[in-house]
Length: 120
Image (tube, rainbow, N blue to C red; front, side, top):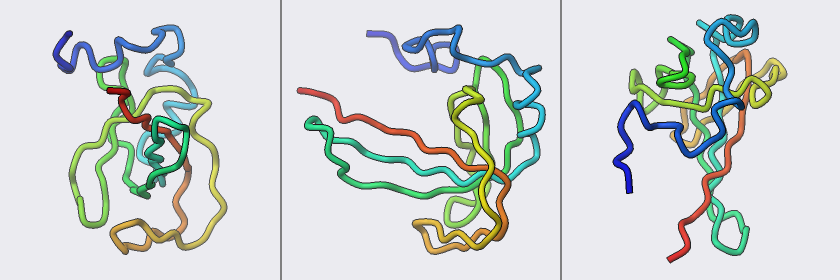
């Protein structure tokens, strides 16, 4: 099994699914605030838990994906997301409470990702 290094971060996915850093939507996302829902999915496809995080997009490239600088309890932590433009959609203006209790006002985009439990 390969170690998950920066170079192999996204190797398990189809490379063609990723946008290039020059993709117009990726360029639009740079500097914007994203709210991201991370769903933990069990082996029977049940929702075990979820977490809402938010951060500002600081860079995007095929090696790292979309990189956020988180806000809230994890302030400043780098957070890596898939560089798949279809995953990011505009979000309605308003206040959004993160799992940590921090409220983000009027973010720009949202995304949701499912994280599946490993079958033993």
